[in-house]
Length: 274
Image 1 (tube, rainbow, N blue to C red):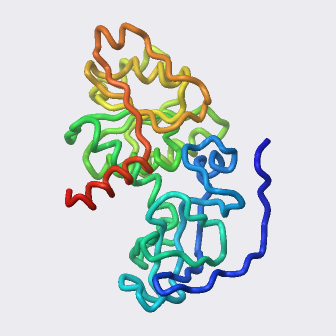
Image 2: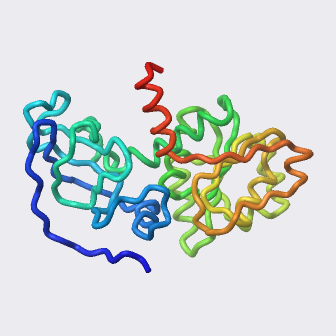
Image 3: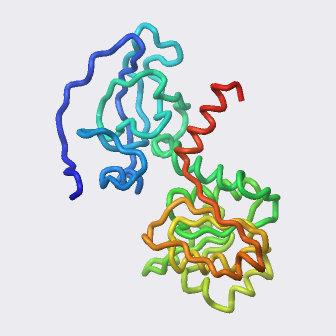
């Protein structure tokens, strides 16, 4: 069964020479955090463990060998598995990254996973130019909202797919205010009226998928030939199904993205001088 999760009072560890004492200011709950607790994530902390992979804290005290941080600085985790669902913690200096204090605390707390994922997916898989378009499902997710805002800054049009819901007009309004060009439901994605949408915006060369199942197959139908679909999540817990014709006649590419792996690969590059 699932491990049990509970609130526990713990002693704060003694501050070592290279350690940093941090007071947590805010820490979100992401789907990956739940997957780690369930034991279904590729990275699992030895139990008992503190949950949470993301958040922002304020430095209270530093060990005498700490060079890059000082009391009052804001910090976020440098990698997965830090255990941010706590009020205070003592961490090695190299596990923390300093961030500016003049950004909203909730933005700082959610900086290291979703916006980074959005940025990398928009830049690493297709060379998009201003005026090009991208289509994504779960557009109101953390990554989805970041994609909308970053794409807007790049001059890239976004086609944003969301599930139908009673307060749909309110959600559409919120995403449009962030910079979304089109917001449509999963049902609309399957209708012939999509042809009208593509009169004002080019067919996308990039699709971003975190759902799976039918949603993915429908998005794929609207991709340009030689377009790429990047999968970074599977909220529907259903496989990605692709018609054979999409591979043969339109030469679409299916790729995957995991932020943790990207960080590992590029940290290695930095150590090698790359």
